[in-house]
Each structure stands twice: as C-alpha cells, then as structure tokens.
Image 1 (cartoon, protein in one colour):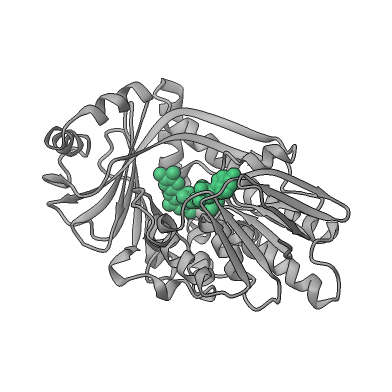
Image 2: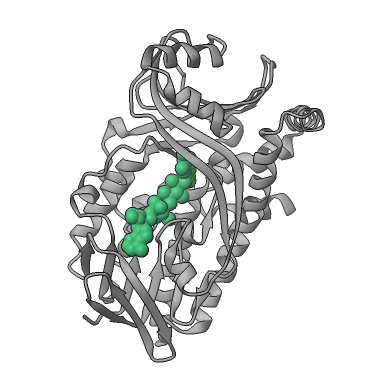
Length: 403
Ligand SMILES: Cc1cc2nc3c(=O)[nH]c(=O)nc-3n(C[C@H](O)[C@H](O)[C@H](O)COP(=O)(O)OP(=O)(O)OC[C@H]3O[C@@H](n4cnc5c(N)ncnc54)[C@H](O)[C@@H]3O)c2cc1C
C-alpha cells in the first residue's frame, strides 16, 4: 500500500495528529497494534488528564471537545499544594489568573474514544488495527513500514506516536534519556463524604505523595498515590474495605469516609526525553518524544502541542509549494518542540525527585520552596500562566516572565 504518511500508534497523540491533517489532501495510514474494538470503546485506565486552556482550545479546534459527554468533564477551579503536616498549603486560585477556572479534567479513555471516533469519519485515513509494526526504513527517496502480517506500507513520511517505550524510536536508532523514579503511581476513582469543591490537591507527605483530582460529581475524585514498589504491592493486596480505610487515613480523614468507585491502575514512573525528535523522513510525537512524570500533569498537554506544531509546519511547507517531509520542516518542529518542553521536563524531574525524597535536606528545601512560593507573586503567576495561557504552553509562560 502507498500513502503520504504512516502514523504508528493510535493513542491520543497519534489520533490528534491524524485529525489535525483533516482536509490537507494527505493520505494517511494509521497503524495500531490493539484491535479496533478496544479503540472504539477504550477500557478505563484510571488516568484523569488535567487539561490546560491552550489544550482545551486545541481539542475544540480538532472537533473533539464536543464529542465528550458532560459528565466526563471535570472542572479544575483551584489547586492546593501541601507539604508534610502543614494544614495551610500553597493555593493557586483561578481568580488570581483572571479565569473562571485553572483547567479541566478529562478521563484518558474518554479522550481516546472521542479522538478515535473523530478519526473514523475521515475518509483519507486508512486504519490498520490489531497488527504490530515489525520494521521501519527511511531514506532519501521515501519510507517503508513493514507490518507483522506481511504487508509493506510505502510513504513519504513516518510519524511515530507509539508510547514512551517506543520500539520505532529504537528501530530508527534514536536514543532517549530515561529516568526511572523508582516509584509506582496508583490512580483510583473514589467517592468521598466531603465535597471536593473543584479543588485539586497535591500533598507531599512522609513516604508518600498524594493527589486528589476533582471530577464532575462533587463527591467523586481521582485519588493518585505514589509509593515505593514494595509499599505499593502491600496497598494493592488490600481488599476494597481495607483500601478505603487506608486511603481515608492517608488523607487525614479530611474527606470523610471514602469508597472505591473505579478500577485500580498502577503505573511505574519513568520519564523519557528522546535525544532527537526527527530523522530523515521521520518524526516522533507524543510520549515517544517527551514522556513526562505525571506530577506536573503535562504529558498529554505536550503531546497536543507537539502534534499541532508538526502539523502546522507541514501545512506551511505545502502552502509554500515545498515537500512536507523536507529536513528543514522537520527540524523546525524539533527546535520549537524542544524549546517548549525541555525546561519543564527538567524542572519536573527535579521536582519529582525533591518531593518524593524524605531525607532532611529535601524536606527543608520543600518547606522553603512552598513558603517562598506562597509569598512570591511572580512564582505563582509563572505556574498559573502555564495552565491558563490560551495561545501556547511553556514558551508563553517563559515570555511572560521575561517581560
Ligand atoms: C497516571 C498518569 C496520569 C497522567 N496525568 C496526566 C495529566 O494530568 N495531564 C497530562 O497532560 N498528561 C498526563 N499523563 C500523560 C498522558 O497520559 C500521556 O502523555 C498520553 O497518554 C500519551 O499519549 P501517546 O499517544 O503519546 O501515547 P500512548 O497513550 O502510550 O499510546 C501509544 C499507542 O501506540 C500503540 N503502539 C505501541 N507500539 C506500537 C507498535 N509497535 N505498533 C503499533 N502500535 C503501537 C499503543 O498500543 C498505544 O495505543 C498521565 C499519565 C499517567 C500514567
């Protein structure tokens, strides 16, 4: 089969990229190893994704926002960061950002379902599902993707969106800086007695990190607990009643009684940053390019930003009568996306290390950071502009700081 672009991976990033090329005249083959039934109705993977204002705008432009059901959209009005036994934390308030809310919370499986439905209606996208990529070759004259069922796809460009553990990245000889945080994150939807009032919590306790992400129902949140793998194994071995009690205690009974309301999903925490995002007739997007630690809630936000940057550069090249696979087009994407993501990737790595370290120097640094952060307006504005800026992610955030 012959086409213009092969996209490998029908996760949120690959699907949004296919959607972003709607009407461009390009013929796309989208290859995904999962069977189609699991893409039309993706299983609940427990992840609740915090969405910035810029990402919400992109999802609207892609025509995906209106495919989400009302009850799938949570409001992130304010956020609170607590350290250890502190009762008062650092508050990030929507009104200080001049917005009605800091952001939104969407279930990952709802994003996947909406994005897949959006791609299914595009006649220019050939969906090839339930089959794995077995080899990729690119060169001056074009690209070839071999599939495990024996098919070979010929294209002008290959775009890999096949997760942070991307096999395609490796097959293309592109290395990645990987950081294993040595922790496991449990995400679990729970009902709780006290209302969440649309406030997200990030709570750095001793030996654990807890987060609470407010969902559409005022008494339901996504609980996020980060522990060492042995401690997490003990937690996962508990039955529902014991788990509910343990969670209520970990939250210091602040939410009253808690009840399990979703599947338990555990993720090993590994951050990944590809050494290059592009090669000849090849580009990486999504987690395959930048796989963030979830603590700053930016993985998918960056995935959306990156696919938008690449699609925009390709469209601009075509409008100027140049090939969309040209090295200069891909290199511009790489430059812009590195600039947008690298500072926050590094800061997140440092933060995640600091906030999961219970040794005394780290505890003191945390207190200093939160205490000083609470007093210093510019620090808070910096964090909040990253969430609420309408036009871009991190570059706008950095620009604002320098003015
Ligand atoms: C607990 C948790 C919480 C998170 N919270 C947030 C948040 O609040 N905000 C935020 O912005 N981000 C968040 N993220 C990150 C976000 O979930 C990811 O950035 C996003 O899902 C990545 O999408 P992707 O399409 O790049 O990759 P994936 O979702 O990993 O999809 C990759 C796809 O490629 C397919 N594939 C892989 N290999 C092959 C192959 N060889 N051939 C064919 N197909 C293949 C896979 O089957 C899969 O469908 C969170 C992540 C976790 C784990």
